[in-house]
Image 1 (tube, rainbow, N blue to C red):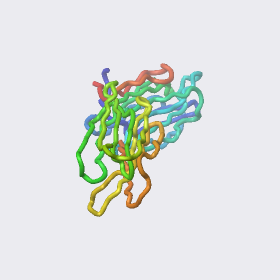
Image 2: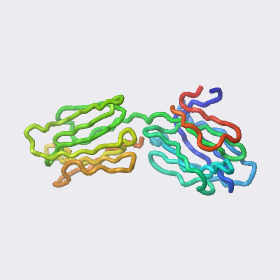
Image 3: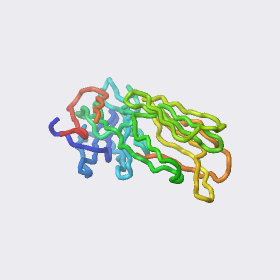
Image 4: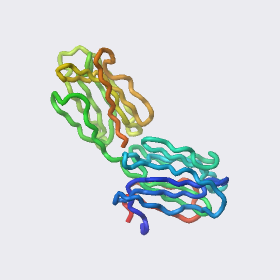
Length: 281
């Protein structure tokens, strides 16, 4: 589409509202040259309104815009409020009053990199462009001993299982490999008397966002992981998988602070606008 920008992330959001709802909105972006690019006005500033504190997103700290929630008044044809959520924080509710039809713009494991919609005297509709979140490999915790393993990346995790006594002796993962279950197991259950535990995810609508665990470290420098806990995108936390008892446990966390076009919500009143996304030309 002619005039669309090639964007990689959203940098800052400026919102102005009046008693009718969102009067004007401006998006600042980071373009493909890793430079800030100020976006155009969408709406009007010709009548009385109130400028809100801009919502800033720190892309240098791997902060990404994940979703937008809002309300749309079908009678007036104006978006009433907007609230933006990143992987690190949530904005205040921006606008006059939460009334009308609620809508959400968001996709699992994806980030917003651009917007489109309709606007005239006020903001009438809002849609978004999405792309997949950057793949991040986090360094492992504990000592570099034993046999190295690396499962690589898949479309998601379906289940995690462990076999443990005082330590986790074996860990298994069931991945989604292009719609097929791919099972991987690391460690050993041979000649061990232990317990089994597992955590099942609601794939593809749920994914792991962080892992907390404990490991024991001996004077020799050797380590062994004793327990793991998984947190998901639905706000669920798994039971503790493994042994939580004992001394000399060290806590650790694995967590990353780390284009699809989602159609606009609202009406088609006013002038159409489209800031584009990563594939814009």
